[in-house]
Amino acid sequence: RALSQSETRRMPLKTDVKLTIECEGLASLDWMSKSDPMCVLSQQDANGNWVKLGHTEWQKNEKNPKFVTKLKMEYTFEVKQKLQFLIVDVDDPDDLSKVNELGKIECTMGQIAGARHCKLTRELEGSKPGKYGTIHVLAEEMAGRTTDTLALMMKGTEILNKDGFLGKSDPYLIFKSIRSDGEAIEVSGGKSEVIDNSETPVWKEMQVNLVELCNGKLDNPIRIECWDSDPLSSDDQIGLLDTTVAELLKGAPLAMKDYKEGRDLKPGNLICASGAIVRHPTFLDYIGSGCEITVSFAVDFTMSNRDPKDAESLHSTAGEGMNQYQQAMYSVADILVNYDHDKKFCVLGYGGIPPGKEEADHCFALNMNDAEPEVEGVEGLLDVYKSALDQVKLYGPTNFADVIKRNHMLAKETRKQHYHVLVIVTDGDITDMQPTKNSIVAASYEVPMSIVIVGVGDEDFSAMEDLDADRGGLIDDDGKAPARDIVQFVPFQRYHGSGAELAKHVLKELPDQLTGYMKAHSIQPGPPIQQAS
Image (cartoon, rainbow, N blue to C red; front, side, top):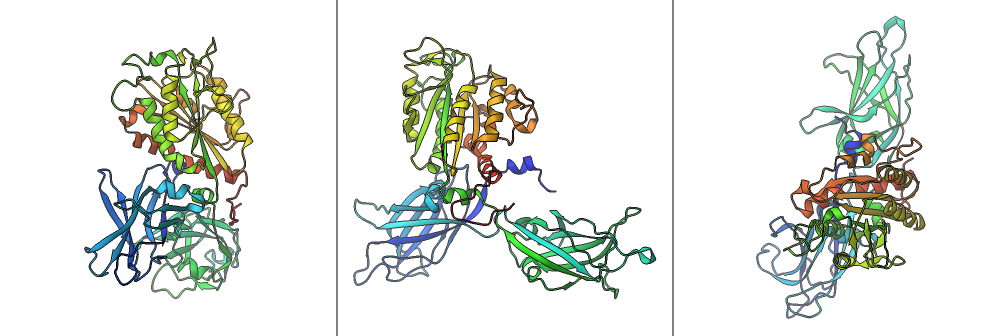
């Protein structure tokens, strides 16, 4: 069955990428000549072991190789995928058990995708200090992108009359994919309108998802069925055509065959009057062309967390490892830092009384510098949080609206190729529900912004579901629903203390939220590509 819009939005971003590897200034291990390099790609599994994904070709006597073989892998945005690129000197390409290491790097797929133009440049490292050369890794999405569509306008000639003396057929088309077992399955959006009483129908333009139709491969077989609509009884099949997208786009008349074998009927011809593959911009298109993701964190300093000096406090840092606030912030920041060029985070607090104030503040900088609330990197994020625990007095209540409004203003002031993510970490239900709804609805219309809410502790967070646009409860004071779903709520306990699982679930909607906003506001990625209307 076709996925609903909400189901599609909740699917994680997974896309096949090809990696192009180039090196410069490799060391020479061979006495009389340059080294003979090859690149081996491995990925770290859940147990910390390196699993080989593939290797490039062997290049003889070359210190500046530009490897022709592309290394392929699946990129998942919300997962930290650790990779190793190992450059080795090969004496015998038929015996890869005997190689010498020339240098290597370890990185994440997110660091490659988040680099400008999706191209990461690093100095190779060796077992001893020294210069081992430079490596460039370029990531590109492979053919068969999940968002690309086939736009085509079909027409028919000499369509067989199934209505007898009562008139001509009322034909419509159904596009089907042909599975590996030979079964033909109708694709979503693949059914045309009915043309009444016509032997020469011209159907309106259709757009069919290219991956769903032919797995993104233009030479894969597809089926087009032509049917006669009959409102008084069941529809009659006129004929069918097995072809490929590549053949269809040539625009030549293609003769249908009778759906029953052994009969000498001529059902007519189908012609693609116009057709094109429409490339819809993807998340990697935007990120690779320079779009940044800016991240802000907002931390709950209400009394329900209990005094940080209390071992039972959710803010306690006395035990081994990180508390839930630290785990939540670290897990999300460790993924998103790769997509922010300056690697800085805006860190705010709410519900507490910061130094110099006598009342609770619902939006203050954790570094106590409201004019410049940003800190450097993931380490700076954790440090400023820990420092604030000694300075901020816990109070209340739990209000979100002010931190949302502040990030709304930040997002409004930035350039087009920018997207903001506000991560709110809280231990309980909010007390300003309607003002929060008002601020969320306003942000959904006006700014490139998403909100992630992480619930820590074991409180009942059921009221948070009202902030999910899919459930229909998110309405502002004027009765207006949000323009798009920008809120994701996740209780930390659901993932049993696994920061990696938390990050996977809170970030999986972000790529579609970013691309959805950009498309809705007609913002194309930097390099011009065809934008679907």
